[in-house]
Length: 434
Image 1 (cartoon, one colour):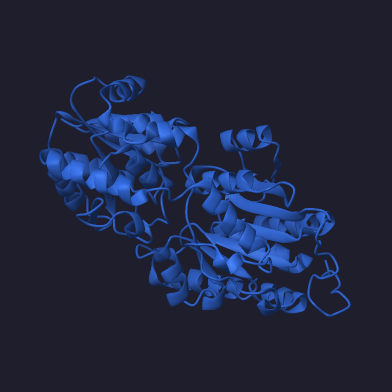
Image 2: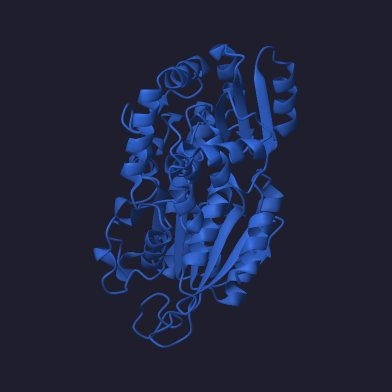
């Protein structure tokens, strides 16, 4: 499909870019799976936008509860079955072609991709369709230290090629942004930072809820836990990235039969982790499965742990800090944006369950330290990570020429309309990425 014509002045996209008082900007938000932290952030961002200015369509490879929530909120949701996390050359090619046809037929002004696979297929499709503006959010990075050198190098090369046709890369947290710049995935002038979103009445109710005995009792009852005893909890998908086996190993090394380990979340490793947890001796592990009431469950935990091998800026750490639960997490990507060692939580290296166990034990044995870290974390969060900030960042990303966008607090100045690659250049660079 060929690019749409430029306006009379030669400016890319000028012929179809809506002016004041015209139709809303058409935005396609593309994500591999509308689930997990990235799915929540994509949905919250779409919900936060002014429908008079932005007409949004969510396109995902799979949906579920979040897709239902989006439809109930009046958002259009399209499921593209060829958009999946696994690498499948023929299926990916078909998915790219189907998305390119959709982008062209629907005349989207902006394509905003999220996560690695949707970012690759979606950005190539947008380039082929001649979409005027391509935005990509790095919720994390597709490469990490636990991959082979060859695989890691391949992913870096692919991202660099995709970056040539990316008008703006929004990075979830400064750690991710720094790595994007360091690896030269996108030109520095086209890299920005965006935060996660935890907002609404549930946030206000959850604030320091771990300190309220009645909320603690209700949370434990909801998880089938006794009111007394120590609980160490994790919230996350049961996937390789989240390292659930490291959590089981850490709970074993902790060596405290009176402490219950709880994992909230489902995923492709659920059966395997259930078998391994059942085989443990003198260690109590509760696999709570997928839950939608995370904020109300967090008061059940004495310590929140996140053993991930790689991350972006995990929403659940923000939620744990809001609830007043002390945090131990791995020092990966943007996690240190939130967890400042000895000030708002404790950090340990990834894939070191013994050190994770030691840090958990320290907080269990030192209530004063745990309380101080939780209090500092709640105070440091303040009013950050709310819907208004996310909406402002996305509006500036979709309409960079809008007056005053550079003055919005907390967001780096975004590149102007004239700085981005033209349609023909975008299309050629996207084809190189294939």
